[in-house]
Length: 240
Image (cartoon, rainbow, N blue to C red; front, side, top):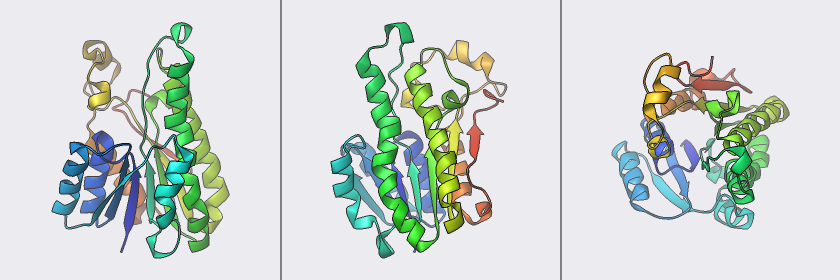
């Protein structure tokens, strides 16, 4: 039986990934910082596909909490086949006016959280000699974005981590890749000035979460067995 762990898997892009991978035949472990109606809705979508769902409540910025919650799944049959790191926040501000908390909060969630929740699984994947790790980065991590120095830095660092990790674990059959969405129609982007953004996108529309999930599905599936260390952009041409 195949299992996917989605860190940040209960709303927006994470929920769409959970639904798509369940359709692909994966049982789903999904994390969130707190329980909410989003969790219930995600579970319903997964179970409608006939797959099992388990919610894990954890704070990605708290290493001890993450280790405690994830420890039952670090080895043996409980070890997930695929791990997707989708946790992320934005605290946008011009760098000249950005305060330390806006910087630290984004770094702790978007980058340190990756270490806290993914690193514990790597040894088990190496021992098993297979596995997939997929990180959700951003177009802002590829090209930078004014007003998002903290967010862009964290997402660019995530790309660097993915590329380096792919070199470390490839010889043991573990594939590591990133997906870099552009402007996706989610809660995080609802306040953005659409009239200013759309002219910058060649396809002249926002993407949707299902379009990101489809790329994750590909990287998690049987057709991506010779792909590692790559960043696949889903951005409508925003970054070329």
